[in-house]
Image 1: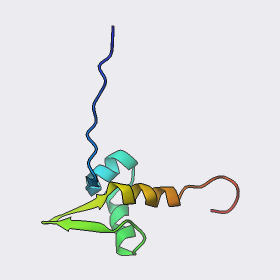
Image 2: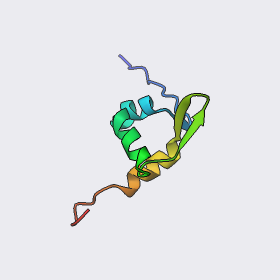
Image 3: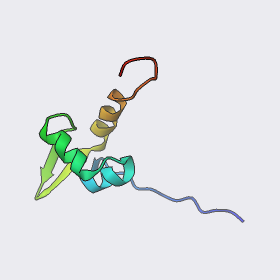
Image 4: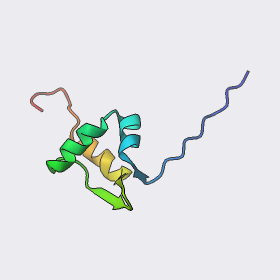
Length: 71
C-alpha cells in the first residue's frame, strides 16, 4: 500500500505561533529576545507580527554549536 505524500505550504512569512510550532521557540521567549534586540526583526501587518522565514533560519544557523569548544 502506497502512502500519500503530505504537501506542506511554506510561505515566506511566519507568525510567532508558527515559529513555536515549527522551530520549538516558545512565543514568550521570542518576545523576550525581540525586546532585547536579540531576535529576528519582526514585520507588523495590521495587529499581527510576522518574521521572514529566511531571516529566522539565518538567525538559527548563526547560533548553531559545532561541539568544538566554546559557544
